[in-house]
Length: 333
Image (cartoon, rainbow, N blue to C red; front, side, top):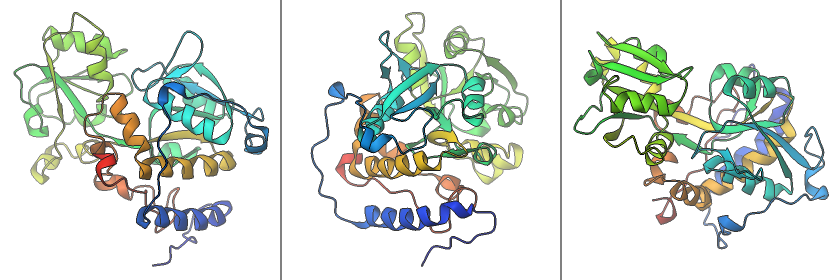
């Protein structure tokens, strides 16, 4: 079926780009790709190429100015300023393919969002989940991956379902999207923490029963803190209809989040340059390789949209007929 690009409210300036993008996406999804060997991640360098990077509408031609959070192993910055972590590697590879330098600065969540929306930076990257509210005031690239929800608990506990949360003390980080859903759990108490380390220590010492967080950051924090010895992790199971009658907000939360690069609203040139490269990384297995490098044991779980994630952007910032290219075969397992 030919995708409709005339849906009311869909930005007119995006129709021509998306007509091409939808066709390319279909070709990537259905074609047999001839792949060259992937570059060694240790040797990734970011060099400027004026022919490629000067016409992307960035604040400084030839570079991408990016705001990041220090949130390892998702993203961080080495002492020499080099980006590291899963999304640090993602941005280095994308910038290298575009011939752009990276100018990165570390901030907090509120600062990164404000900087993007005021166009003081060209982008922010680092576990930014797509939401309709953010899409109204900024642009998202195609998804890098789909982040599942993990819960931390003490070893021996076997909580993995919403119904099992009843009566427990629940915790997460300040500002996380889990909080409204957590407050719907019967007889539960909810606490928030400024850092993942503080939350995990309270679980370790039985001051919190179940913590919600990033499925890479939680085990990474435990591995780098000798005081954390008795924790285990479970993916949150998809809630049943009966569970949703009690805590309906978990219907969205349990499916996880579509993570992408967030850009200013008028950065359409940069978004249209980045998204096809992201699609290629997913289809080729390059993104799966990065996920494995940074601790994901089942990349297919992170590269497969669940439930609403496959369609939630259609009609808001993607046209009818849009599909995220899929990674299939042994490269994605």
